[in-house]
Length: 276
Image 1: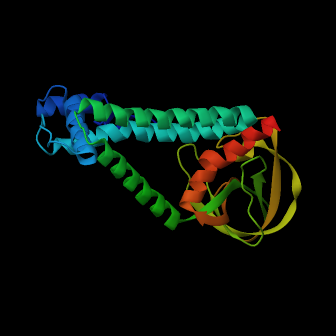
Image 2: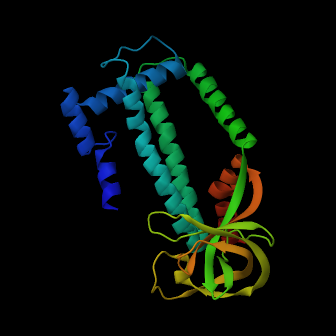
Image 3: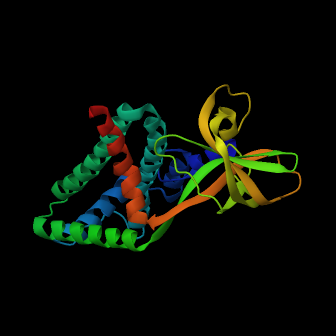
């Protein structure tokens, strides 16, 4: 975790030590602000038209400015993913909070685009609308054409020669079907590695499972609703722990349908149950 923190600290796209070192090395004050201003001017010129913008820095720094503009959004998207997982556990109130948070993020992106239009002196608003709509259509077509395999996440437990897969049951959580190939993985705080494979067999039955099965550490009290499958044709590497993670396919769809369902469909359905 310390190594990852050090790497993030060295990235020059945000105002941390890596950026200060780069700015001192190239001897350009306010390097990030100037490169992002050049990048915004180029983007506005490409979207809205107008006169070719005058740049403050050489051409190559526009790419640096683009990374500086995109990097915070990468962090925001990751935070949104974490926030959705946390908020959906609180039922309709959490779903309403998630939809509000998503609306704020989309509204802020639209605000930044409008700000770019005003500050760069662009005037061809019709071209801007046409360009944005065309880019959105291309992205939607790509997402619709790209297949996506939905996955169910659970835990495996080995006792003697028997291995079971336990999947938590809750609104929005997928369940695998019988007879599908699953991947067994180690349970780590920062990452997981494959340790074996198996095939889901008959359902042992619904019931309760210890919460710590689904966490990368032991000693956590409490139980959750779960469904247990007997695993068949299990192959495990030598020396692996007697419990870990299991990933199972839970259906095929398109990337667009999956993103729509996760971001809007499931939260909206959960929120409307509050008003029924």
